[in-house]
Image (cartoon, rainbow, N blue to C red):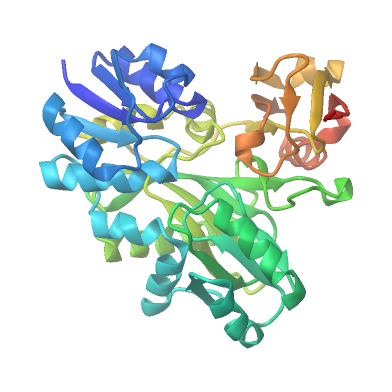
Length: 408
C-alpha cells in the first residue's frame, strides 16, 4: 500500500481522495480547515496549510510518503513541486511550476519565447501601475497574479477605476501582486479543458467551450465561468494549432508526466493566446465530465503520475456525445429559498446534481467559483442544444433568494 499525500480536503478534492482509496492507496490529506468534507474520506488528516511549503515538506518526511498531489487548486501546485523535487518524488520542475503559477512571470516567459501575448506587466503597488497606465491600449484587464477561477478579475478603460479594481485584485492574491494586460477580443468561445503529458509529450487533451454569465443579466462579475461544455466547436485546424503550441510550451518548460488545465483565447486572426496553464487538473468537474465524454479517467492517471507509475498507455480519445458541467449560481446575495428547474430540462439534461447549500442559508452573489451553490453534470442531444442552453441557463434554472436585512 503506497502513501499518497493529497493537498486539500474541500469539495473539489473529494473525487481524487475517493479515487486514490479505490486504487488501494493510503491517503493523507491536509489543509488549514479541519471541517472540510473531503477529510472524512482520507485515512489521515493533518491541520496544516498546504501553502506552507516547509511545513508540508516536514510532514512528508515524517510520513515517508510515496507521492504528493494537488487536485483542482492552483495554490497547492507550487507546494507539490517543491516537496516532490526535494524528496526525489515524481513531479514537474519547481521552477517551471513557479512560472505558470504567476501570471506576470508566465506572460514574460511567453513573450521571451515568441508566443502570442498581450502587453502585460506585474505590479506590487497602485502607484507603479498608475505611472504605466497610459502605456496600455484600452481596455485592460486587472488580475491577481496568482488566483484562479476569475476571482478578482476586472476589465476597465479608465484610470478612475484603477484603484478600486487593484484593491479588489489584491484581495485574492496570496503574494499581493497584480497584473495589468491589454484585453484580447475573443473569436468564438474561450478554449478550456485538461491535458496530460507523459515524459513531456502531450498524449491527451480534451478541449471544451468556456461559458460565462449571460451579459443580459448584468452580472456582478462577467468573467466568472459557469462551466465548460464538450466537444469544443473550434475548427479542427485551430485545435491542432493549439495542440502544437501547448506541446512547444511543455518542452520549453521541461515538463514531465502529469495533468494540466488550460484557458486559451483565439483572436480573429486565429492567433493562440495562453491566458493560464495550471500544472494540475482543472476544477469545475472537468476531469469528471471528461471521463463521461471520452472514457479516460484523468484522476486515476494523475494519481499514477504522482506515484511515479507508468502512464504510457494513455492515448488520445475524441469526445463522444455532448456534455457539460454547470456551476449553479445566484446573481443576488440573500437568504436561499430554493431552486426551480424546468421539468423537461430536469428529465432530459441532468445527469448529476449536487446542491451544496440548504434552505435559509445566506448565499453570496456569484463573484467566483468559491461562491457557487452546487454543480450539475449535463448531457445534450446536439451541439446546438448544448451551446444554447449553456449560454442561457437562466431560462431553465432559477434561484429563489430573499433579501437579507441586517439590523443593528
